[in-house]
Length: 105
Image 1 (cartoon, rainbow, N blue to C red):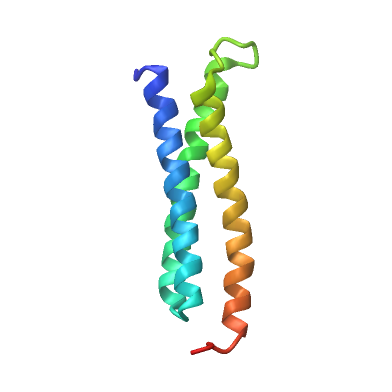
Image 2: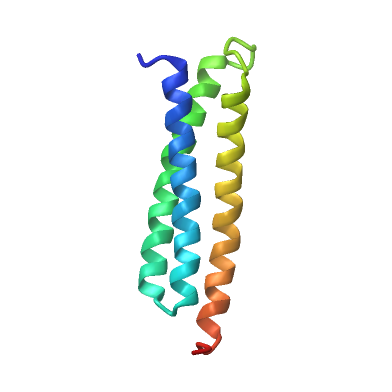
């Protein structure tokens, strides 16, 4: 089994990638490229899905008993995951708003 730090880093990387893809989706929607925006959001959701599986694995290892040490990188990775999920929610709504507005070119 991978060491704990590697698992946490994998969670961090996936959460960061999810955030980046959601922001890319917003940029594409702003340009009127809704197919690319949809693709980026699908990729973002896949990254979050993978990060969430890792998070669930970590919770299972801890068993709610404090078996796993909580350090700054663990908190940072959780923060990234939460932010990615919030950005996804907001991006979905903003993409829909862009869809309804005429392009200002």
